[in-house]
Length: 423
Image (spheres, rainbow, N blue to C red):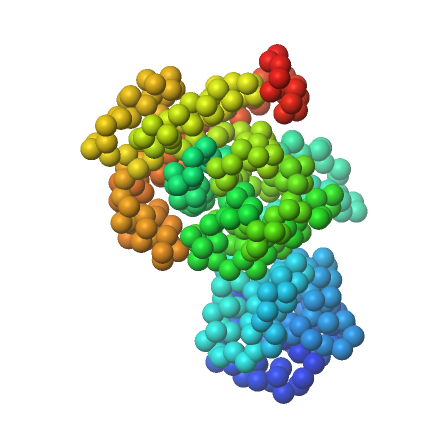
């Protein structure tokens, strides 16, 4: 069939393979091209047949589904793997995703569930041919091409508030979705490692998290990162916080910095939702960020903390344009106006996001971003969309200026050097 999804079924039980084939036989856009009974056979057939989708059983004699998936992900990166297993606990899910699987089906499953998973994974498959490795060798007989120009690093935007409850997670999530909708490759990182809310607010299961990468910072590459980052239906790539608070202890300041810098090579924009505590983790995020979206509200405690943060940013020698002031939950009924906030803090307010608690809380409860669906035309949503447009324009123009000059360097030094002595 032309334009069909080519599927390889891998299971050590012939009757299971046949049952899966029967579930797919009436789907005109899906073609079962081969069947394998062992992990070894699966690897050879994947190399020979180049399937689009591999339905991989996890428990097999010899090389099991995890081992076969890891090998196939290396040899045939275009093949997208869906793991099949009677086991559905989080450890199996995590191991499957680390091995390169894109989805997980718990046996027994129905035809609708199977077909939906195949089509979903196929639609979200990466365009391998469009993104060749920079180290790809030239073919025999082909002229040696000049080295490609150095890729422009991605932009990191940290969303921070020194006062909890200011709506940072809402701003960060919808900022990320808005930028992704503009066509940029975008990742959202839940940097509130102990009590992050991104998974709940996006209705995502924490199958994998930043912990799965923290012990592999010396070997980070696109394939490893892609196996841990989850894809939201809005096309936003999401790296979730650990599922349990105590797991956050293994993520150190240096490991997180290395991870964020690795993400620069993969994505145009990386949005980091931070905690409101100024500990070493938060400071490392703010330090590596190109821009900080400082979220405040129309009350004195929020303004006091925002003022203190601006003082700190000057002590850290942050450039003035690095910190962007955003006022959230704005209402004309509150005594401190947006203009008063700008005058008091002596900083421009780049966006005032109007209050709409009912819409925001409803979106959070449903796990649906504000800037999508029925709410995308609400004033609160359009304000965040405009914020996203502003951030993209600002950062892209800044990078263009940097490319023109090509002679600037960052010699600001580490945290303590910049905190105790300005240049």
